[in-house]
Length: 308
Ligand code: BDR
Ligand code: CA
Image (cartoon, rainbow, N blue to C red):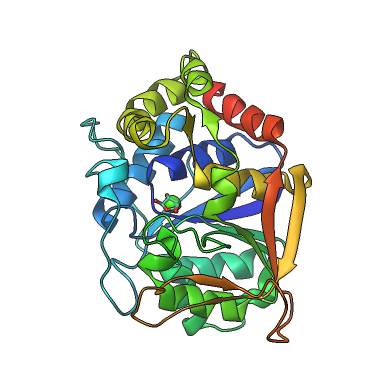
C-alpha cells in the first residue's frame, strides 16, 4: 500500500477528503498532521480525532502550529461552523492527539516511508513549511506532494485574488512552493469547475452508515450556506484534491507551469501567480489540475460515505 500522510485543518471538506482516503484500498493513512486554518487548532484537532473515531480509523493524529508563521489571519468559521464541524455539539472523541508535534511527525514519517510517501496538504501549509525549515531534505523522501491551494487565474475565494489556504499563511505556502521539485496543485477554480449537485449529495448522505450519518450532520450548515450563495452546486475543494491524490489517472486535463506566491500586503497578498505565458523562465514545477473525470470524483465520494 502507498503510505499516505495528510496535513489538514478539518473543516467540512477536509472531513470528506479524509473519508475518501480512509476508504481507499491502495493507500494506508499513516498519520494526520493538523493545521490551524478553517478554525482554531483546538477544534481542528478535536474534529480530526472525532472523525477517526466515527470511521473506526486508528491513524495517529498530531497537533501542529496554532497559527500562521508570521502574520495572524482570520479563520473560516463562518463557512464551516464555529467549531469547524457545523456546530452540531458532538461528543468529544475518547482518544487524544499524540505528543509529537506535527512538523516532527512529518519528518519522522518521511524517513520511515522514504521514497514512497504521498503527502497531501489540505489546509494552510504552516506545518509542512516548519518541517522544511527543520529539515530542508524532506522533499528528497517524499514521492509525491498534492496541495489544495491557490486560485490559478486569480479568482480567489477569500479575497478577490487569493484562495483561503494560501492566503491564511502565504509565507508558509512560499516556503513549500519553493522547496519541492514538483507539486501537484488542486486549486479553487478547479473546485468550482467540479460542482456537486446538492440533490445528489443529499442522496449520498442518506446511505445507511455511521460515516454518512455523521457527515450529514456536520456538513448541513455549510451546505445551506453554500446553497444560499452558489445555487444548485456544492463545492468541495479538499475532496477534489483527494481524488487527484488517490486516483491521479482520473485527471483529464493537467497543465504544467511555474507558480509563485505574492507575499506583499496589498490587494494581491496570498495570490498564486501562475506564469501562463512562461515569461519568467522558471521551470514548470507545478502540475495544475484543470479537469477531473466528474463521474469518477462523485463515485469516490459516494463510496466513501457509504463505507464502514
Ligand atoms: C480551502 O479552504 C478551506 O476553507 C477548505 O477546507 C479548503 O481546504 C478552499 O479554499
Ligand atoms: Ca482544508
